[in-house]
Amino acid sequence: MAAPLTKRQQQPLSEMDISVLQLAHYLENLEYNLYSGGYSNFTEEEYQSAGFEAGFRENVNVIAQHEATHRDTLAQVLEMGGQTPLPECTYSFPYSDPKSFVDLSNMITSVGIGAYIGGSTMLTDNAKLLEAAGSIVTVEARHDAYLRAGVGGSPFPNSFDTAITALWAYNLAHMFIVSCPQELPGVTLLPKLTLESPMPPPNLQPPTPAGTTLTFSYDPSTFFTHVAPEDPLYIAFINQVSDPKFEKVAASPGEGGLTTATVPLPEGVEGVAFAVLTTFEGGLNATQLSEFGTLAGPAEVVAG
Image (cartoon, rainbow, N blue to C red; front, side):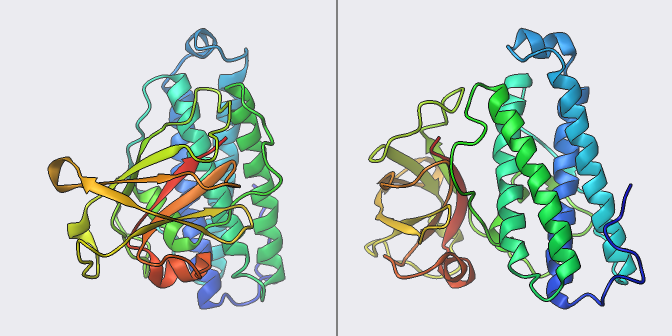
């Protein structure tokens, strides 16, 4: 393993550096377990029977080893800074065959990419850490491109990827975690927002067109603040480098105490977007939505 920093080169870690590194290490642990399972749980024959090219399974193993190297490198940087990396959690990934594994991996890798982009804005006082984060996220993007091509989608569908905050990345990752010896400190678990329909098409083509009705569900009893039944709610879409787009929710009672919310997919939302439920009808950027504007979420929306 090649470490990006030596003890002599590494400047003291700030609290922000530690927070970003711990989240990155947390996500790399998850991704390593995801990809190592995708390699060990299926044979080469099962991959080829599912339509993947010869050697795809071996490349899944290569991705797993990359994630292990990222994880170990981040752990080493934390240890050189006097910090103890968080231990691995116990994970549960909802896939049953090579195809559903690759679909899930594409979604989780998009979260990792978004988290690295968002986290890099917090490392502006540490050039070596920023360089290391940049060198990792480009490899993550190559993984994502390979996975997309594997299911017949475009390996590079958009000009920009979508950054997400640490809070949102943690909550998206947490849905695959059964238990953890130690949770990420200082990060809150938010009420869930679930995308019920539509699901991405098998090969991510054609892209979901603007105006398509999206159906979400949420449990209003889990909100951190009181929201009256008559208060209007909105879904905010965070996508690429644009300002969030807000759509008013049409809400109706669902099953099991849940509320069903429908909104149209806004014009201009492409590729991977992240949706949050909010009381704000507009005027907030992604950081503000994350800090004080999220009632539930985020949910990942793949528009193409």
